[in-house]
Length: 360
Image (cartoon, rainbow, N blue to C red; front, side, top):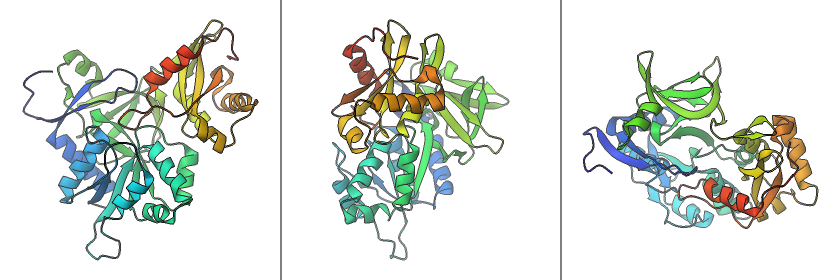
């Protein structure tokens, strides 16, 4: 790491490295504050936050930045394993909605945390009541399964799906709509973003910075590496990572597309899809699921894989059908709350080399 940084750099965030390639992202004060202002405009104005994510990741950092900009003090969960009961107790310390001068109440979560809170709320009225107190619960870090989103809204939770990265000072697209001065375009199938929240670049890596941040049409754009679309109305839809593709039986298969299809099935809302080698097909998608979640959702039994394959084929085509289901006691997570895809890929590839498998 360089001993000195540009005077514009206020903060350096190390990306989660969920794919094994961590980078140090340099952010300016103006970019961070632009993100906070855009969030205030998109939500119910400045507010008080519950910090439930690590502060050294951009989503956690944003809670602190938005609190500073709003002049409020966040309530902070203890570090370690996420506990819905501790979250509820912490959230109860926020000013109540009956107080005339009470600020808006927010928190930022990853899907696994939201699912854990909803599970706890089913048997604990206090947890259920706390969730309804928030003016908005931001959920990001990965795609939020539609079933989880519908379940949360049915429980009275105001969920806002966010999309962004450390390179954009965190979430800059809310429920598919770019916030603040952010704009989105698709160039050669890749989603690109521009606006005042963009990072300065990658600390100590000029080549990587030049590859990811480009000048076009008089603006500086960040090449996200994500495949997606932007509708005529400006609504952004992300379909997966451009490099998260396997060649199975000679056909390109997006693991992100497969994962979204799998996550809509009962009990598989937090499943993760990774690649595995196959002597017959080259590579195949494999579904990894926590044993408890699969059992509770009813996706078990000898025909479970067949049901998954049928559902995926209807959405993504025959070549995208998963080769197998792998059960684990718990999905390993990074400190950011995202699935540790590197660990899961190693686990699956060490499980066995599929000699033929179901394949396409």
